[in-house]
Length: 245
Length: 161
Image (cartoon, rainbow over all chains, first blue to last red; front, side, top):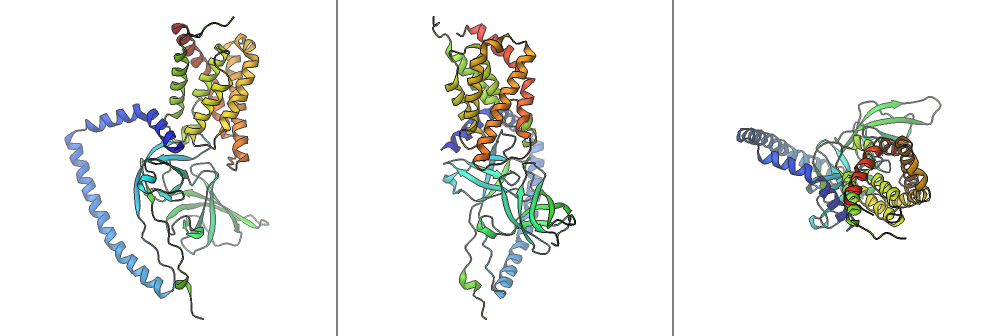
């Protein structure tokens, strides 16, 4: 209920700006709309094409996974949501979304941008919800290096373009430019979504841990829309893990 | 002798407008540069009409600010109540200050509020390293003259007592 109230206040505060934006939107010329329509049609075609390949890949992947007795990836259901407000607190990276329990949003669901993981839902109201971004200083995500599967936990620092991977032994194989994806451990985030790219690795001699910095892939400060991953990852099926001795 | 209240709605209206300014959407990277409009507005009314606007109003404004920031409830409310109490104890002195002295005073009160809020949030397990949380107090120093002149004009025009 508090989430809904806060969202209402934010919507009220943003009403003048939204009004102007809506007005310019409705007075756009026919040509520009036609252009956009064409561009979107093409984009849609490309994306549809890519999805077709994806379907084949998913099928392949599922086959390999059954061969390896691993738990299968569930296909996630996505909810498109609009970011209606950003927390005015400079040390808190939180956003309000325009979907709530009514639309199937639950606490703990992951929030995605086009480029990667954005955050997670921390509070839901009936028609709105609040999400914490991955760069908030109280947020952490279990990740793994895409190249070799090294696992770690990436933490926000309160700065938009900097995250840190802590407690990685200084002998770990990790390098600048490595892609970090969600590992799915702890069950909160679905596995396989890109989170950040390693920007700096400092292996100080005499230190037991490497200092690893990364930059989130999602544009946390841009864009109006995000996706909520509506289905929780299925619990590991014990039968699938029952490897014969 | 208590003067009967006149045009009390003006106080509510201006505080509401200040709260809206505080909730105005800004990119995250800019949010540290936002002056604390609502707190400045509150402090103006405490300074001008200490018998009308006090700690209860401060708690209310603080609670609404906590709500719109999605912060664990009570941090800013507690901070604002304490700084408002200090201002109420010293309002006669602060009224005599010249404008920049007053601005710095407001900055200090806002910094105190921010520190108390930070303290509450740290205790609740929401740490925030660095001194970024103090930037709004610093920025607000330069906005106090504007807020004061504007609200004084409004107060005199509507003869708020």
